[in-house]
Length: 298
Image (cartoon, rainbow, N blue to C red; front, side):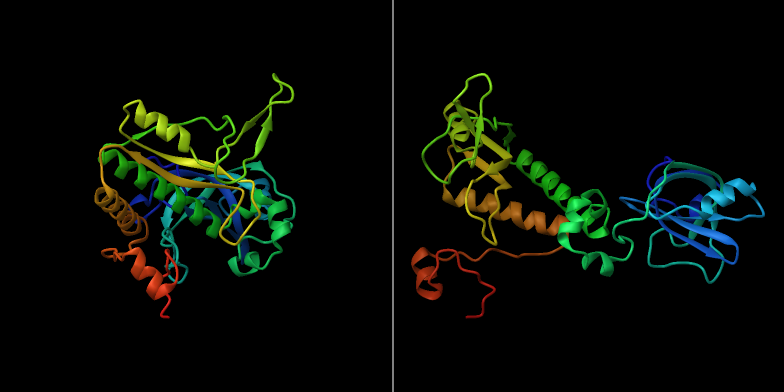
């Protein structure tokens, strides 16, 4: 184990080892003349203790003046937290780092909004959060979303590889085509008055790849549609694009079901069970829609 990595790795077995932790100041507390600073990165937090009896006066003063979200590097020895101070709510809550070195990598100004309190941060005006997006992305909820998306992408790639599919990147600047949704256009500097289009989906490329004999191809495709916004539509989005030759509907349905049930099981720990299969006629008769929401008790 490398003891200079994430702030969520220290455990009781590391007691007595000298470690370095780099990250952001999550909180700074002065309790009876001893300063406790929680250092945070994307994986979690580590508590560092600054005891004035063991530190030079200038180092202790520097620690006492650190604002939230300042970027620091702390070196010290890992010890077990005293009784009554252990925090079972975080993974590193049984240990702490008794600091003997502190480097301020970047001192933060007063923040436009608080991010260490999830309830407060969630109530901040969205326009303000987006203006300071770099702060908004530090919130645990946003880190969770990015980690979730990364895990879904990784699990999808592993599954499709096991099914014999190749992941192939296709161009995002291409010739405009008349079908489907409206496309975003990108003017060409080299050819004045002419434009590239951003693909609403990589449909043309999929067909070319099948004709070329690639046979099985998939892509986590970025798609662009210049259409009016709805609650389930935005100008750009990512979709899992799959194309295969020499298979039938049953095989495609099997593979899609296995992929989705596997994703939910591996990433969320949710067992979806077998997918119900109904005909178009039954769907229209029972629900009045060819894509019914089966969670609706009506």
